Every structure is written in C-alpha cells, then in structure tokens.
Length: 400
Ligand SMILES: O=C(O)C(=O)C[C@]1(C(=O)O)C=C[C@@H](O)C=C1
Image 1: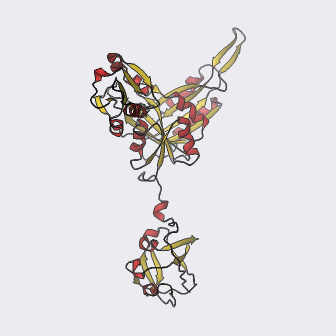
Image 2: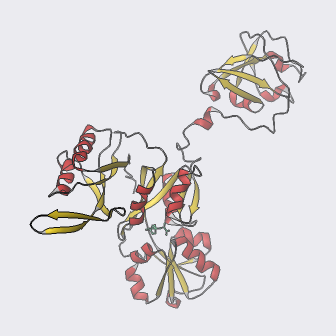
Image 3: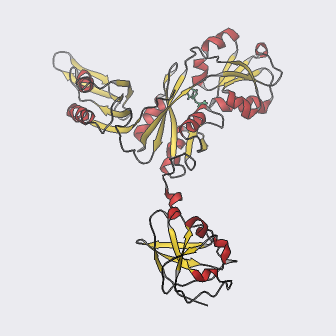
C-alpha cells in the first residue's frame, strides 16, 4: 500500500477553497494510487465527505481513505503539478467529521447552534424571549435562576435569558442580587409583549373556575380580572407549569394564567385573552454570556453598571450628575441592600451615632462604552464609589 503524505496549502475558508489532489483519484484502483504528476481542483464540501484533513500552520495533510469510487468525489478538473502525494486507505465513515470553516463561523449569527438556558418549563414567557433573541436556538429549561447562571458558567449552554423587570410588576430583585454572585456579562436585552390568557380544560367555562394557578408576576399583572372572578390564587414556578398542572391533573374547576403558546403545548383552551391589567404589558429580559460583547456605536447601546457609594451629603446626587453633565440618559435605577454589610454606622458628634442601610446601586444608561463620554462618566463616578462593576454594554432592543 502506498504511504506517501503530501502537504497541501489551503486557504482559511475550506468551503471556497480549491483542493489539489492527484489525478490518480480517477483511477478505478481504489487503494493503489501513485505516480502523481498532476493535480486537480475539487470542491472542499465534496471532498469533506471522504477525506480527513488535519491542519498545521496553513498546511494540511490530505488523507484519502478507502474511496469506494473515485467518482464519489464529484467533478474534478485539473491543472498544475504536485509531487510525493500519499494516500492512506481506511474506512472513514465511522470517524468524527473534521471541523470546517462553516463550523467555526460565530454560532450566534443565525442562532441555530446557540443553546439558551431559561427559568421555567417549555411554553414559559422566558422561553419565548429566548426564541425572540435567537429564533433557531435550542432552549434549555432550568428549575431555578441560580441554575440558569450555572448552566452558562459550566459551559452546558452558550447563553442565559433572565427576566429583569416588567412594566406592571416592576423589578425582579432576585436577579439583580444574582448578578453579583456570578461573573457573567450582559450581552443583550429582549423586550417581550406579554399577553396573558386564562386557560382551562376543554369544555370548561370561565365561571366554573374556583382556583387559578400561575407565576406570582402573572397573578399581579392580572389582578383586576382575578378580583372580578373571586377565585383562589395559587403560585406556581412559572406560567407554563401552571398550564401543565391543569392539563395533567384534569381538574375542571382549576384554570391557569399563561400564554396562548402554553395552551397549544399542553392542549388547553383559551377562555379569555389579553387579561392583564394594562394592555401594554412588557417584560424585559437580559441575555447573559461568559464573554462580553465588544461595545459598538453602530446602533443604540445601553450600559448596565452596579456600584456602591462613599458616605457623605449629596453623594447620590453627585453620582447621578456624572451622567447628566454629559447628556447621558438613565433608563433604569435600582437599589438593593448590601447583604454582607447591611448597616452603616455613622457617628455624628452632635447627634450621636445612627445606623443606615447600605446599598448597591444599579444603573442602566443610554450610551456605549465605546463613547468617550461614557468612559469619562465612569471615571468620574469612581471618584466617589468604593466599588464599580460594568455588568455589560449591549445593543438596545428596539424591536417591540
Ligand atoms: O412564568 C413565566 O412564563 C415566565 O417566563 C416568568 C415571568 C416573570 O418572571 O415575570 C415572565 C414574564 C411575565 O412577566 C410573567 C412571568
């Protein structure tokens, strides 16, 4: 058997490269290919079906193994010369497919290879938010917010999606706290219109319901309708699991508040739709990743930060002024207690000592970290903050 190996130069993009191979491939003698004196061009996609390529500094060893028929390679046209080519014969079909340049294209370009963790069950709004961001992604349900963070940290998924605030119910405080216990970066946001439906088993009327299950945020968002119905409200982990419970238990007098998508998934009927108090009910989600995105200025960006402040009169006013001075709009401000240092004791010689709560301040401002005004503002803020962390700089979701 022949045992020559030829180094073949190739360009970075395999798919569009033309490959040099021996015209002996056109021999019907599968395992005995020798005596090369010319080479041929072959489409790399075709070649990949039967070749194993290993690359090293822009050169590749081409192993053509146990070709059934050289004609499998498709059309081959020839020009030029090549010496000392070597063919190794072996069955390749069971070997792993080598990575090609298409495999190495950013997995996020169409979302098709992205795995996104979310809290909840299939049919939850958080899953819908993941699909809005990456329409072809694989969604990975998690039982807890903590697991959503960990799934990314442990490389089980590429991204996480996390609800952060709702236009009726306000902030999801737990998730603000979790940012500081993990080192993930905010790489995007998703604003999702949340139209709640009242779901029940087929044949059930709204008036038959005595009990309604849903996620606490959804129950808050539908308070008016719930008060009118005079029903018992029961919290569930997420809206989709409420729908799932109603469907699996088969109890006629129990309904769920969830999406129409959840109704389809679990085979329930929509008894009423758009039952939320405000018709414009929007939940904002954040997309988290292990690595930050490079801040751009090509489209509107937002930056999220968290910081603590030194004590002193007017220090919060000064902190906010660093943005106002540079015409930077703030789109969100939130404060959370510092759990490891909940109280600050301040001694005032005239009034004795007092105890204050100590806070983390979270701000979203409408500027990109690629803009000098944002960099100067944060430099200025650092003058009176003990601790400052940029949680992420990401494009604003303008698609609502
Ligand atoms: O329960 C769900 O389906 C969720 O995705 C959770 C959640 C939330 O936490 O706010 C998401 C969007 C709606 O605001 C209601 C519930």
